[in-house]
Image (cartoon, rainbow, N blue to C red):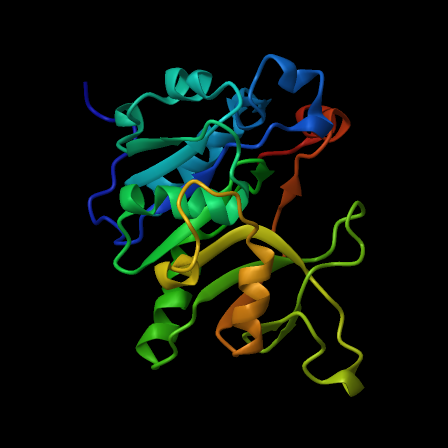
Length: 249
């Protein structure tokens, strides 16, 4: 059988999809279904990401899982029907974002950068190819970031935001206080250098934010603002609203 989606010129960046969270706020839906397999418009959140990756000519992905992880492997298999090569990084208990990345690095096998996308965000139309191209332009200009992040306008459920953006530099402190800068929210989409995780011990839980803040203090984090469709599918109500009213046209 021929793959449904083809990627004739593979993007060299592998992708890591974060899918190990328990999804407590999504209960009772996540009592029997892992959160990244919840569906919007008839497709799971993970399938939306996989199709977008293939469209961007990224044909290799690693997915971590913990809670009900066998359902994820059963649903997606090896990815061949999308023209994707999928491997899995199972965790006995969720290792948080940075811990999950560190555990999976031998499978991701980056040289030396890789793309990471949260499995529980819905961002149809996110321009992955353009995002990775702009990142590559940074490398070509001589910049060697440890992280390159997509930031979005603050959603109602997270009005305080996460980080500041001035030009293409990301910081957790105002870069120019007199400009009264406004924080933006981290989208859960970023490109990372493997050395960002070098001091973490495999198999140990670790959060991403402290690593990013340390790198920001050394001016090693860059990024851009994305204003297209982006949703943190954090509650059953938000999932219901997206299924009832989201316009894919």
